[in-house]
Amino acid sequence: MLASSSPSPPPLLHPPSQSPVCPPPSLLLRRPHQRRILLLGVVSSSISLLLRHIPAAAARGLFQMPPSRLSNRYFLVRAGESVYEGTGVLNTNPVSKTSVDNGLSPEGAKQAARAAAELQRMGACSGSCWIWPSITQRSYEAAEIIASINGIDRSRIVPEYSFLDARGLGAFEGRSLDAVSQVYASDKISPNIKPPPITDGTPNESVSDVYVRVTQLMSILETQYSGETIVIVSPDSDNLSILQAGLTGLDLRRHWDLSFRPGEVRPVDPKSIPPYKMPASAVYKCLNPPTCT
Image (cartoon, helix red, strand yellow):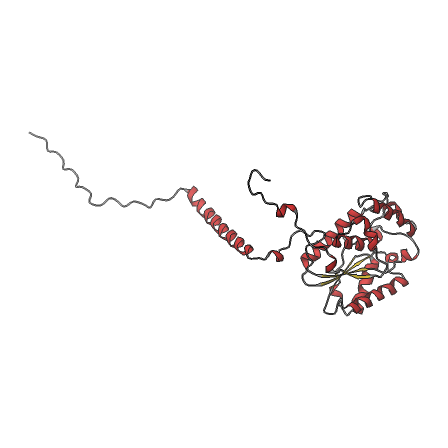
């Protein structure tokens, strides 16, 4: 007797439903990252296209002396005589720059008033202006006199805390004003010669040291303002004479030729700034790299 074989199951007409295949976790983590990269690429391209349409004249780079141009109008003012100067004593230690004895002497107050009247005559603040004095007592007092006579609100007085400090004369501190002639004799030899040091905290600054400070000041002003009038009030002559020498391209060893009297006002004449010369690196082109002739 033949054994009966069990019937085979019928063929499946439809395959069983399968659950959706999930990508590996690493792929899920990469997708937002890829979208972020794509987005950054789009933004970067947009910025690049925008920058291509900014005129070169409107771009502002690192401020250099002499400048290619000035965005503002400037007036340079030396504050009037201080009480220390009235007694014939040199005082350049920044520790005492806000002391009463560093304020204007009676003669210095008159000089500051004449400076304010001269600015008014020049029309320096006829529309409006910003007054940037050193925080040194005599400079700030002179700035208040300038603001009062020219009808400028005190909110437009911007004290400068370090870049306009009087030049530190080191071991000449406390000596007679006549001793400064020895400093200027060294300046004529090299702008890098410093006065002898001293241990009371008074800096001993060379012409080059002051040049760095006033260049930093101009960089701030040219970045912060555009199309404005700015009155710079310095406690001494060296800040202003070195600044003007830098603006006009004068040899820094000759900055004394541009010295300021107490209370003197001097506008920065754009015509005195020499034509800008592009550095060789900006105009040199290699036509046959790597061989450049």
